Length: 375
Image (cartoon, rainbow, N blue to C red; front, side):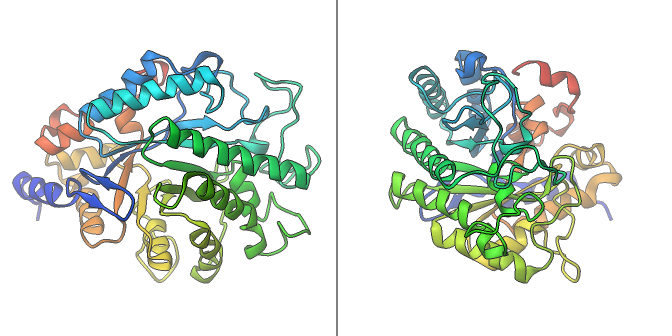
C-alpha cells in the first residue's frame, strides 16, 4: 500500500533532517553535497561565481558540502586547466572566499583533495611536459604507459596532500576529503590491476593500502587530532563498473583497517546505485559494510534523487515509493549515517529545502544542459 505524503514527510524529517553528531563534525542534517567536477575555475583559481554556487546550496539546507575535486601541488595532478587548484596564493585566496560565503549561509564545507594519476593522458594541459604518474605506470586497462612511481615521487605526493590539508585548516574549512575512489591516484594504489608493484606498496591487499595510509597519516599530522578527515572509496572505477577492490567482506576489512589506524574519521562510500547490496548473502550496501567493519560513520552515495522513479516517490507515484522508502529505512536503521546527493543538487540548489518542505512537485530533474553553467 502506498504511504501518504504526510507519513513520508514525517520519515524525511526524522531521518534525512536529523542532526548528525560525531566526535569531530556536527551537522544540521544528513544531506551532503557530493563532489562533482565543474571546470569553472580558469587557471585553477575559483572565482566569485564558484563561491556563489556553493553558497546557494548552503542557503538551501545542505548539511555538508564536499567541493569538486581540488588539485594538490603536482604538475600532473590533472589534465584539465579549469579544474581548481588547492595550492598557490591566488587559488587559496579564492577558496577562502568560498569558505566565507558558505559559513555566512550557515553551512559546513570540506575540500576534496585530488590527484588523477594515470587517468590523465600524457601531454595534457596545463602542464603538457609533465608525465602522468601512477603506482606502476599502468592505465585503468592495466596497460603500461609510463614508468612506475619512484619512492621519491611517492614521498613528494604524500607531502603534497599533507600541505593541502594544512592549508585547508588554515583558511577555515571544516575538514578535508581525500579522493581515494573511481580509479584516481590513491585508488590506483589500492587496485590490483593498476598496482603491480613488488615492493612495500604492492603484492597484497595490506601492502596496497600502504600509500593511502601514508597520505592519511601525513594529513593527520598536518592538521592535528581534532580536524575531520573523510576518505572517499569505491569498488567501481571510471568506465570499469564491475571492478572490485575487495571481493569479500574479509578482504574489505583488510583494506579498511590500516586506513582507520592512520586516522580516517568518516568513509564516503561511492556506488552507482545506493540500493544495491555489496556482497551476496546480505542486503547491506557498500556504506553499510564499511560502517559494520570499521565502526566509523559512513556516507552513502549513488543515484539518490536522480532517476524518474525515485523522484516519482516524492510526488506520490506508485513507481517510486519503494525506492524512497528504502533510503529512509536504511538511514533510519543506521546502515549509514549521511546521504550524498550529486546531480540532483547540481541542477537544483534548493533540492534539500524543497524536500524538507514537501515541495516535491517543484524538484527540477537533472539534464545534461545543467553541466554547462553554475546554477
